[in-house]
Structures are given as C-alpha cells and as structure tokens.
Length: 174
Image (cartoon, rainbow, N blue to C red):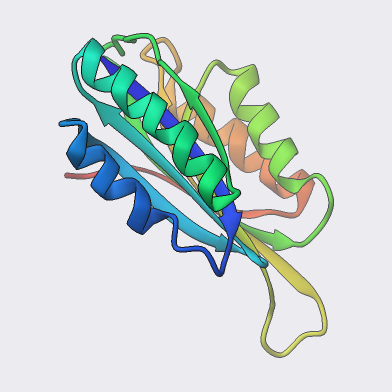
C-alpha cells in the first residue's frame, strides 16, 4: 500500500527532519521524496510504502506532527495504475518571455492530445542582457503509442512558433 503526502511549512521549521524518523519508526519505506523552497515556505512531497497497519500508524503520526509544528499536511492513498509498456518517455524543455498563461498553454496542448505529464518544473528569472523576465520549464512526458511522433513534433513546433516559445522535445535515453 502507498501513501502520497504533501507538506507545506515555514522555512524556519525543519519538518523533513521530523517526517523521516516517523517513516522509519512506523516501518514504512520512502519510494520518492522531493523538497523545495518557495518564497518563505518549504514544500515537500513524499510517496511512502508499507502494509495497511504501517500506513495507518504513519497517518496518525502525521496528525501529531502537523499540530505540533503548525504545518499543512495532506495525504492521499493512490490507486495502483498500470501504465502501458508502449508509452514513449519524452523530455520537453521550454523557454519564453514570462507571461501569465505560458504553462497553461503548453499543458493544454499536451492534455488535448492525451499525453500524460509525469512531472513539471519551472521557474521565472531575470534574463541576462535584457530587462525582461523569462520563464523556463521542463516536463517529463509519456506519449501514447497511437500518436504519430513526427506529426506530433511538427504540430508542437508550429504551436511553439505561434506562441513565441522556444522548445526542445526529445526522447529520454537511458
């Protein structure tokens, strides 16, 4: 059984140092963990695995930690989802002038074509040599087998040209 956890707290609180021993004490294991600082906050997400009893014990421990540290914790028991082996993993990197809907436009394009988004990271920064902000993203995608890759690539590059986005779409090589 798995448990997905999202945590948001003040930068001054080292809640990760509280969560990791709790995972160990409940005899659960960490499948995935990520943390990042967002302004004056720290955000984290974890995927925990254990048997039903271990997960239930961990959930009750989380309630105590949340109250004691005054942080926000949300949990979800994800359903097992078997992804087809035919999906093609791709990496997509974009860069454009910062505007309000750039990520929304890209994700809409992908979802309209039933492309699964496994991960999105992005950030805005002041570009050197110019006085404008630039927004950069990186996506990890799973492209379904029924999509013709050459047509998808052409369609996506046309979309990027119309939206003034520079992009690199390439298969993930392992």
